[in-house]
Image 1 (spheres, one colour):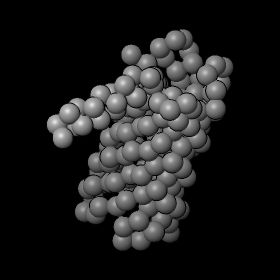
Image 2 (cartoon, helix red, strand yellow):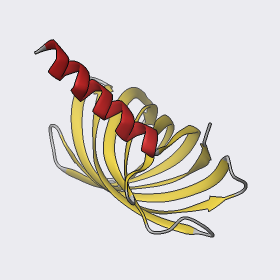
Image 3 (cartoon, helix red, strand yellow):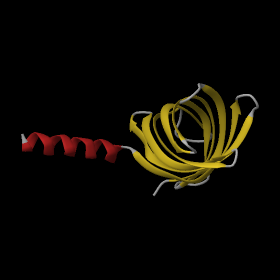
Image 4 (cartoon, helix red, strand yellow):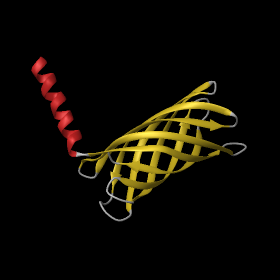
Length: 154
């Protein structure tokens, strides 16, 4: 049994070795939440992942701080990422989940991702994303999150 665990662990590590690891640092966001009244918020994220893990598919996860209506909260996110190219302006799409803790409530969200990655050089890219999001917790809310940031490939 111990050998099977080690073999599985090595297979997972080799899968990550095939992909291209990245960090997205200090990503700024603007939330447009469609409630009554419409709310605006600011979010700072630090995320990382592996691009091209299995062909064009990758994984992404992150943590962030969200400030909205005078309340600060903390969030964790995870999702899948699909890249439509390898050079020039690279369109990308994804689907993921987010959990938000703080502000007196805990909410969970399902979010899609549509965006562009513009490689500045081999190790740095500019990233612009739009994330339509449905949040559950107390009430169901639809929001659009627009995000711009820097992606670094170490």
